[in-house]
Image (tube, rainbow, N blue to C red; front, side, top):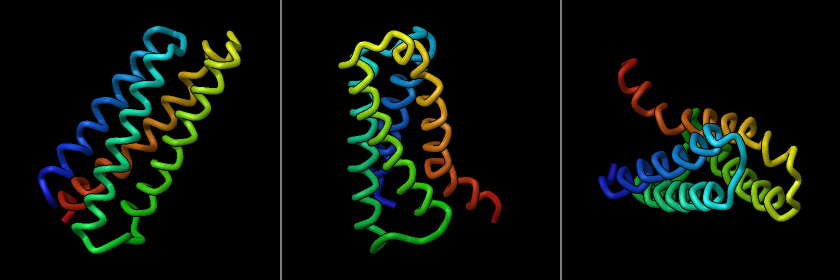
Length: 121
């Protein structure tokens, strides 16, 4: 795999994790959390595109399918965060982290699956 794609995907992990976990620690969704969700999504989509180009296309395995699901969920997550912030629904602002953590955990599957499968042999 191209090292620049790995750096960009790892940047996605860092940015998305900052957004998700700082939101969880704060106990409420803030606009700057949304910024980190979007930056993570941008890096993940960019890095994934580079990897698809490098590998010759989409692989219909655990990594490929979970990767598509993760990007779609990250997109939904960012849009929903924007809607919650615009509507200023206090209950939704305080409970948004539950969805964030779920999406983050699902995102970890395609991030770590190549390493896990490689170690498994």
